Image (cartoon, rainbow, N blue to C red; front, side, top):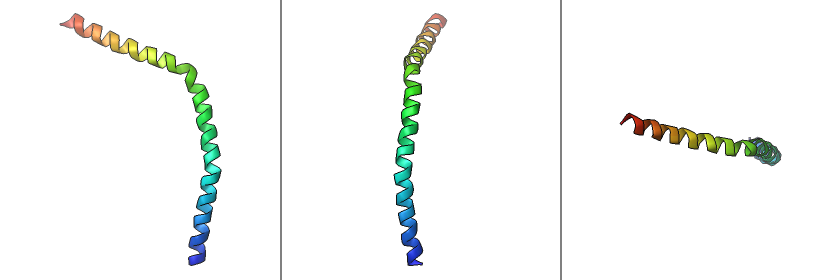
Length: 60
């Protein structure tokens, strides 16, 4: 029982050590893909906010 518990801890540590570079690589890929779109997303949010305010002001 104790041996199995100790081995599961080591497999967890090994899994974490293997997962960290994979997660970092995926984050890097996502970052590279998302960065060109960030200004578009920001512009779209601003447009939506301003249009919403404009429609609200025109209603009242």
